[in-house]
Image (cartoon, helix red, strand yellow):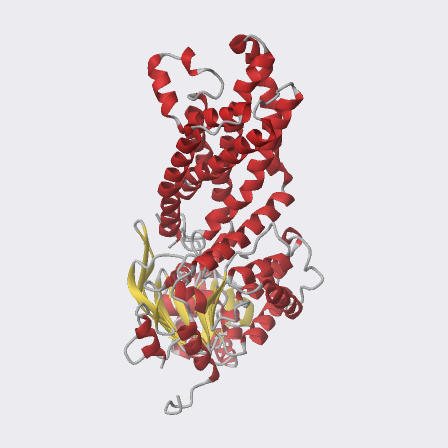
Length: 347
Length: 279
């Protein structure tokens, strides 16, 4: 039905047969001068799921999102959102996608209520209804008390919530969340996660970018790991964590010189290599089960390797990256163009 | 529909949204979006009163300064210089005011909220035209204060209230039209400072190489030629005829024509460069 109607309208290109994907991207590329910020990324986001894009600063997450949101030109490859070609129909795409930026994109000069009203008006909603929606959203996001205060007085968490509220005015079927909790304190992050889960569980599709493994784990149904503009892994949080090990044994040896011996012992016990930390004498060991730690420790004791400290932790993004890419998630590496707005390079 | 395999709620909603999506922004929508953006710009002005400094202080200061400094030298005395000077100051003030449009747009475009504007299904011209509509308030203040200050130091316009009103309206229209040039500069320059610099280079020759402050007859021939074709000269002459004699001369037509030409060229250029830069 959709396909015929659109064909009659003549300007919207739908995939033959109509994909049932919310986001379908193939070989997306964005170049800023010599730097390929996004270097051939494929994505398939199913309707109704929360899809996480995980990667360090400068990996190309934001650039990719901005291309999908029609904010940046797609240099090569193609993308469809609900079967609509992104490059060919930016105006249609903008009606389907709510964008919540990395830096809260609300107007500093207006109050929270005025912001929501303005965006409602711009979306073509009549003034009284825009006012009603603003009040509703302020209530849902716990911002009633601050509704008439200038945004300048808002905390980081309040800004993010307002930003998210603004993206929901038109109830778009697809929402982009660009690093929704970067820079927030742990308590506010937790609140933001609750907000995202509760408000978005009503049937939207969500494409989320994050640098935090735990955030992707908490929110996403599926995760794509992005590094240097390329996708290095994709799967459910459980699949990814299994690839990395469920937990990490962190060892600090008394004698840094004994690292090779310790590595040899670990290889023998687990059949896999430990990860050498830049810190002298420190080793990280991925474990499928936390109780394997005991086996490793006993073997080390038997081999006469002395340990000065030991801990078992959940794998961090660094370890995911080491496991998947063989190098550390050293953010800001050559990261111009990603976490910047990307517009400066786009001329 | 019934033939389809039981679709989930969200896919149906998305499909409905795709088919309900509009392909283009209509003229009516563009207008209401522009007005919404103008409302935003007015709020911003009210909350940053320093934006009114140029439109209040400049007409007051410049009118008095120019009158007392040049009055004697150019026209023998201050009173007889005023009919020549006030319409000139009017043009200069309006031009300075519309120069700020570009600088402010550039500053605004670097802010996060412009990302949201770009991501919304709105006419690309709305974020550019909205602030320009709001700027009409600034032009009105600047024009009114220029004449107010003139009256205070002894200017008695021969054209009466209607003539003065005509001059003010013409100046406002000219300011609004020329603001498109600065809006375009705002969309192509890299920073607000760059906009300021480029705008000054456009503004200074336009105002000073005109008949705004001195009679054209006193200029060397080559300069007089440029001064005669300068659109600012047309505005100044038209405003003089209106304010001093309530005369609607051909100069009014020339001014309006030049303004329309500016809009026809620079409005599409601005939208194009805004779109290209931000897709």
